[in-house]
Length: 272
Ligand SMILES: O=C(O)CCC(=O)C(=O)O
Image 1 (tube, rainbow, N blue to C red):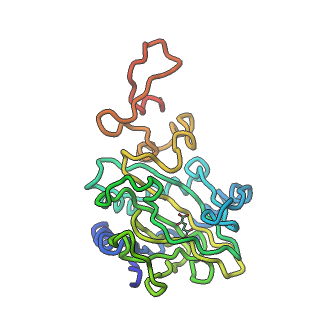
Image 2: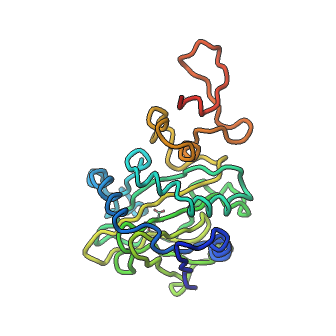
Image 3: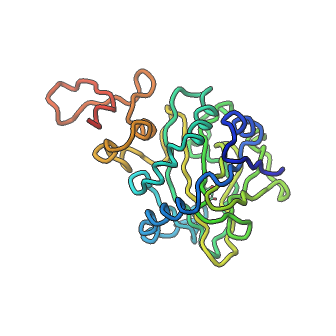
């Protein structure tokens, strides 16, 4: 099965229709090369200081650099990109009123890095979630060209609908080849993995993922982006980090330093 490629002026509905059917797609050239360069400059030092993975899954020749909402203005703008956010909200709306940011991570696969095992990102919550519930929508922004040779994300379109015991044949696996500035979008149930890097330069992808507002985030956004920093961001981003009330009783707090007897405060209050 081939991967769907859409132009950046695609409609939200068209993208959602393809995602529902195939579980993954690429939107081409959403940001330009200059924007990618600025972003790479913003996070270069952090990547340089990031150790390689400590096991086969995280990749012995792969660096995973997180906390990027705090570290990069361009990353913040990508998290709230109108098209991506519109697609994500529409795609997940049958399962939640609010979505939140699940993970920010630059994934740098160095030459010699091996392919990851095919997996479904929803496995982060174990196997407790009913299969009818799609918990997340994910993006990997190409900060270098993504090629078969340099480790473009591998994917098995349509596998989100498979019986969980079904294994992928090699001919069902496709690579998300795309030019720098494009974005690979995939749900939490489709089989995918980082590819092997057989080239002589690193492959860098920016993994920004979103989940249902009532689930626990993979990257703890309150610790990665505490209130004294988050208070400077725009309200859409603050809400994505989790600094708004979720459902009726989700996310309130009491101020440990206040003498008010533990009055319940909405999370927005922490940003005042
Ligand atoms: O780096 C990639 O292309 C995909 C990484 C991935 O799927 C993961 O780390 O869970």
